[in-house]
Length: 82
Picture 1 (cartoon, one colour):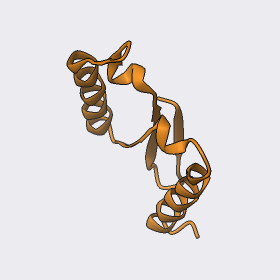
Picture 2: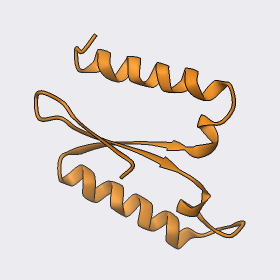
Picture 3: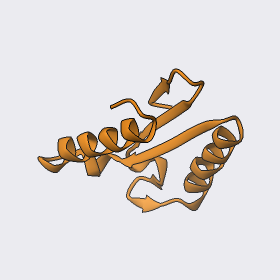
């Protein structure tokens, strides 16, 4: 996991930022790598974690910071932290 947030009511939030190495070998899609990623997500969810994934490309350029702000605004509102 790239980031782990532990909130006051025992909520555990995992944030993943995925580059193409999570889904590809070189420049070709790799179903095995993708399967490993979703398998890891299932395991974390069964252990009580919420998992949020971002594609690395989403965070590049001028739109990335706005996307992150919007996400955290919604996340904090969900948990009554704003």
